[in-house]
Amino acid sequence: MQTISREDYLKAILKIEEEAGSVSNQSLVEKLSTRPASVTNMLHTLANAGWVEHEAYKGVRLTSAGKEIALSTLRKHRLWEVFLVEKLKFSWDAVHQWAEDLEHVGDEELTNRLDAFLGHPAFDPHGDPIPTAHGNWTDGRNLIPASNALMGDRIQLKGVVDSGEAFLQHLDRLKIELGLILVVGKCLDFDESKTLIWPDGSEESLSKQTLQNMLVEQLNNKGKE
Amino acid sequence: MQTISREDYLKAILKIEEEAGSVSNQSLVEKLSTRPASVTNMLHTLANAGWVEHEAYKGVRLTSAGKEIALSTLRKHRLWEVFLVEKLKFSWDAVHQWAEDLEHVGDEELTNRLDAFLGHPAFDPHGDPIPTAHGNWTDGRNLIPASNALMGDRIQLKGVVDSGEAFLQHLDRLKIELGLILVVGKCLDFDESKTLIWPDGSEESLSKQTLQNMLVEQLNNKGKE
DNA sequence: AATATATTTTAGCCTTGACTAAATTATGGT
DNA sequence: ACCATAATTTAGTCAAGGCTAAAATATATT
Image 1 (spheres, chains in turn green, cyan, purple, brown):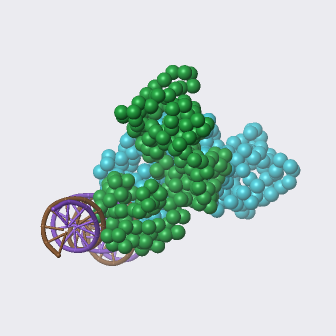
Image 2 (image 1 turned 45 degrees about the vertical axis):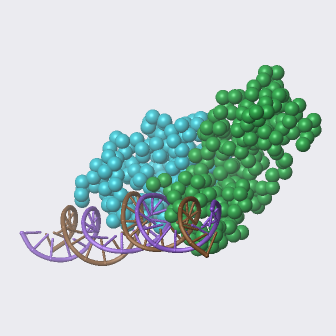
Image 3 (image 1 turned 30 degrees about the vertical axis):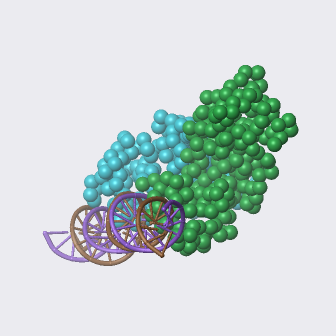
């Protein structure tokens, strides 16, 4: 039985609130790969602790106490991911599981020392913003999916929507990493894939699916929508 | 209920085997601050897994598989302690509890990367030797308790017998840390305390208890027994 | 050798988080 | 409004690791 902690649930609820607005039991089942009854059980526990408000059959919402714990856990998770990549030289597709364990270690002081040691990073290895010690995590950037970029745009990869191992390894195989600057070439209408031009002038065609998962910054206005 | 893992039990058995030769149920109760029935329970679990040999009412011994796990856990624990002190700047009396949690995170690869990142340290912040990746931990040093040093000896603190918070903080208050070189002055017979001379020439008298817990290297032979 | 004391084990129960199966409540199509 | 389907909750279990109280075994003293 691989057990999912209260913090993991709070983190998942936070993410689903951001992504979808409302949090169904089902959405937690999917995000945490568990069973409906387990979710209901845990929601009772969390509601009991005052971390969520839960009305039967209606869904769940974080209280401010719950949100604080969720953000703090997310902060720890992302700081440890930075540690694993920057200091221990793991690749960005290998760090999630260990960070999942490390996030449960230590208190605020340890987290703050880790933060200082890492130089107060603002983003984790997948480009996700790291909440500050006081729960701020408004991401000042204005990223768009690469699928929205238009022909002629210069774009720089700043994040990914899907940070699962499979997708990250797909990017690795394409030699795509955070910071890479590309130019949008031809857009092939029928399947919405695009030709991208590498810094060395070579070209590659990426599928719509891949483009939707790449969060980029537009470096010029040529193709602004 | 703060739960003690199978690895914690194996580590404790290893340490007691070293210190006392044989491992009684009672010795585990004391080392792990738990209850006799919990120990018996866990010994069944460990024997079942093939990590110890346990005969009712007779005591327990690590198998080679058990010893391997114990050493690997000890290695992780001590490497994380080095990380916490060297990189996150915790004091040596504050790291034990977090290392206790961190040692359960990660696999051999993570441990080896951590080891490399830390520069393959041979000793932890308390002077205890760190087992190598292949389970070697024969401590080449020849340390003696400071209580055995004689008048005129130059001694250097290289380890502690008791690495509990209270004792370490006691040393902190005396401004005693690993590496400090002292000279043994007068030995006060009736309670076996000794006067020690600091590098700056000042003197301080330490109790027998404190001296027994300080593991030192003799830097000359003046007082060799 | 017999009894007193200390140690260890057994028996039975608790807690957390998980699971399956069955019952309940919502929702969508007609 | 009614029925089919989907989502959620309830009820009943399980596995780890912990606990207390009582029974069993060892050890020590006379």
